[in-house]
Image (cartoon, rainbow, N blue to C red):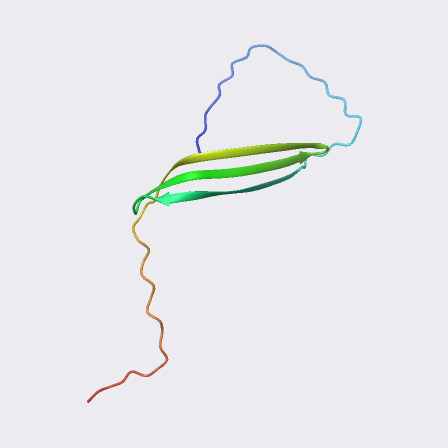
Length: 97
């Protein structure tokens, strides 16, 4: 993900008057679902072939449907995962004489 900065230098002065004659709430319903597919190129690099997401929001009687489809590369730091420990055995060791 990437972001940016917007510098707005507006020297005008604005005055806004709001008259609220009804009830107001600042909550809304939203849900997101998505998935994707990766192709491992080697131990560090992976190509994210596709990632698709859907975001649905409901503000009162108004639905907003938003889709996002992306692709890209993923770099994984580190090496292989450590090996799993040997299973524990409750049997007593056998001593050979």
